[in-house]
Image 1: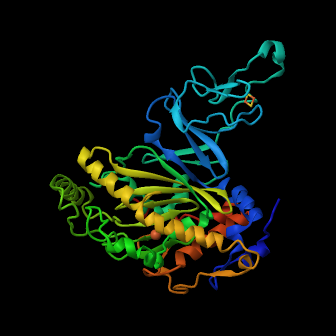
Image 2: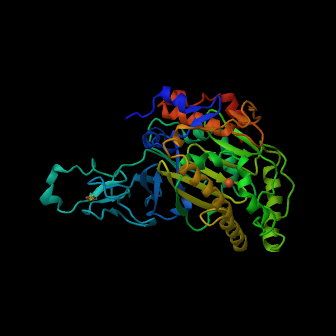
Length: 457
Ligand code: FES
Ligand SMILES: [Fe+2]
């Protein structure tokens, strides 16, 4: 069922003149089409290796409206299955995480195995109550195995999945947005990877549309007025100072891919060290030492620092302070489930991890001071857009319209100053392409091999 034709999409999302209909934030039929055309085709973040460190560990995740099980089998493979029993649809795994030899359905007791020493294909049906008496050879256990997600990729500890067998490789999907994600995932001393998740995942629900969250993190510096009260109290990483005491950032948008960041262009000189933990000498000494290691490791290679961004459609991150991942799971047109994961150098001393955790929780998540501001913004923007008159009005996305110019050192990217809605316009252009049901050949930019080589490293 198609709720919105390509023609109607032009009316709903006019990114040339910078207006977007409120309908796309409140309408059920549009939401259903998003689930089918965006969330069943996009690469989606489903978890982190640290959430399933041991064989047979599992973690209950989501891909759009679909609940999924993320698990590691005995052979070490990371697998994603639809969390719904093939017999009558019961949610197979109702724990948030744990360790299980097999997944046994609580309804009629069908059980499924992922281990290759027991089954040929992970997810196969292995146990059926009253099998001989009730089914005999009529039940094909291979046919009724768990629905397995065909594409799963691990990138520096993060795990991504995609239902579409024709989907482009994950790194093509990411493009040069990878540089910004890397800064969140790499060790602070510049070595690739090396971060771990502190504790588990914070999960909470907010009455808003998922796109309000995604577009905020894609590059909305304009809303800093919302955080004025937070900026006047001492919630900086060291427990003092302003949370926004950092270098100016630009809106950098990936026009072909829909991703956006507020950040710096790649540069070859590490910004000067600025002490932030003066009240805690051990923590300060760690960051000082790591800074020197970083300068040594990276040499004059291009690097980015200090960014906040959204990878289309619903994975957002802060890469510096705090250093966290935020996933916005759509529940309905006006409800999301937010998941926050907090990252820290895996080999950092405990006091450094503790200091980071305290700052992260003060800043982000359901009890965080800045998240509280934004949750109000998003909730009330949704609530005030549902009414029959309100939903017929457009939103304005004209800030810095026409200011975009190429971003040097980044494939397919444009930059447009600190206060800009260019990244939002890019996000919604991408959204409309997916909603129109375009083929992958039209959705992905052609990669120029010479450019790929020039940008490697
Ligand atoms: S619904 Fe799972 S065994 Fe019947
Ligand atoms: Fe904010």
